[in-house]
Amino acid sequence: MANRRQSKVADGAQRVVAKIWEIRRVLVLVFAYLFLFVWLFAEGRDADIRPSEILAIPDDPLWEKPDSEHWFGTTGDGTDLFELTRIAMATTVAISVVISGLGVGLTFLYVMMFSFDPGERRFTLLKRIGRVVRLLPAFLAPVILAGGAGGGLLVTGLTLILLIALHLAPTVAKWFEEGEGGQGIQAGYVLGLTRPEIVTNRVVPVVLRRLIGVFACLIPIITLVEMSLSFLGFAGDRLSCGDLVAHGQDVIIEAPWMALAPGILATAVVVILSLLGWLSSAALKTGRLPRWI
Image (cartoon, rainbow, N blue to C red; front, side):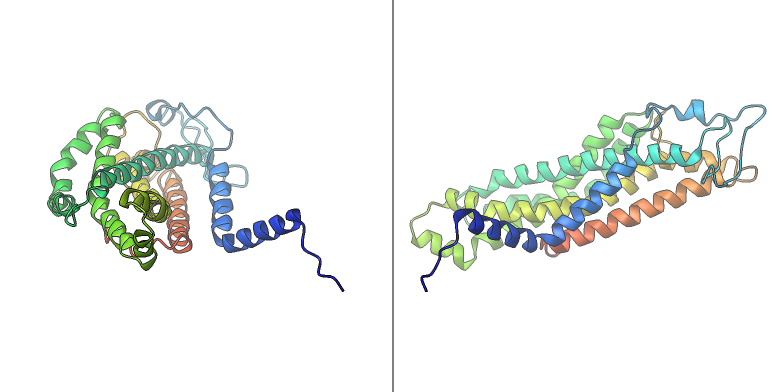
C-alpha cells in the first residue's frame, strides 16, 4: 500500500493545534485578563466623575444599606456604590497598566543602550547605577507626593516609570548576560553570526517574553501604590478606590458600607491581579524576579 503524504493544509493545521496546546496556559490567562478587564471597563455611567461632587453629604442624605438592588448600598446622593467603585477601580487599573507598560518599555530601552557594547564589562555602569538607586525612593517620595497633590498625575506617573526602570534594569541586564552565554549562542558565533545579530535574533525575544511576565506582576503593585496615594489625598479631584475609602471613613458611623465596600472590592481585584501575574510569570518562564516585585 502506497504511503500518502499529508496535504499542506493538514500539516499546517496540525502545527497550529500543537502550538495552541503548547501555549494553552498562556491562552487561559489571556481569557482571564479579558474577562476581568471587560467587567471593569464595561459601559456604564460616565467615568468623568468628580468625588468632591458625588461624595458630598447633602443635608438630607439618601443613604441606603446594601440590599439585593444595591449590593454595596448607595452614597449620600443616592448613587449606586457598587457601580461607582467599579468605575473607580477601572480608573486605577488603567493607570497601573499604562505606568507598568511604560516602565517595562523604558527598562528595555535603557538596557539595550548597553547591550551592543562589545566589551565584557558593558553592564558595569548600569549595575552601579542600580545599586545607588536603592536610595532613590526616599529622595523621590516628595516628588511623587508633590505630583499627586492637586491631581498632578503626569509627574507621579513619570516618577514611578523612572523608578521601575532604574530598579529593574540590573535584572534585565543579567538576563542578557545569561542569554549570551548559552550553548546555542556559542554555536551561532561558530557559524559566523555577528554579535548584534545574535543579540537581536536570539537573546532579545527571550528577554521580551520574560518582561511580559514582569509587566503582569507589576500591575497589582502599581495599583496598590495608586490607591495608597489617593487614600492619602494625593489624587486630586479624580475618582479612585483609595479616595472612596478615605471619604467613607468620614461617615463610618452613619454609613459604614461607604468605607468597607470599596475596600473589599479593591482587595478582591488586587488579589486576582496578583494571582494572574504570578501565573503569567510562571507560564512565560520569567524566572526569579527582583525581591521588590
